[in-house]
Image: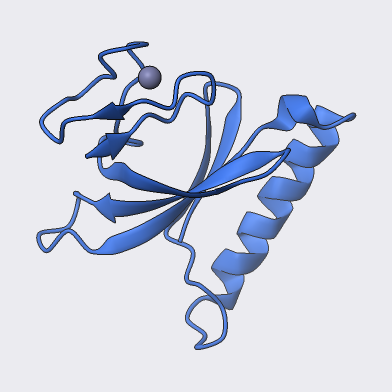
Length: 114
Ligand SMILES: [Zn+2]
C-alpha cells in the first residue's frame, strides 16, 4: 500500500498507483521514495516508513515531512531546516546518526529522507 502524503487526505492507495485516487497528490517523492506506512504525526509534521524505488533492491527508508506553515516564523524554519540538512550531509556515515539520503522542499513542505 501507499500512504498519501497530503496531510488533509491520508488515504491508502494500491502500490500500482502513481497519484492518489482521492486527492491526485503524487505518491512518490522525487519519483522514487514511496511512503508505505505513517509512523507518527505531530503538530509540525509527520514521519513515514518508505521504500526507495530508485535503487534496485528497494531498501527501506524514512520520510520526514515538515509543515513550515504550522510555525509562527516559516522562513526561519526553512532556514534552520536547510542548515540541519547541510550539517547531516557533512557528518556523513556515523553509526549513531541516521544517514541523510536527500533533503528538499516540495509543495510548501520540507522533506528529509533518511
Ligand atoms: Zn490523497
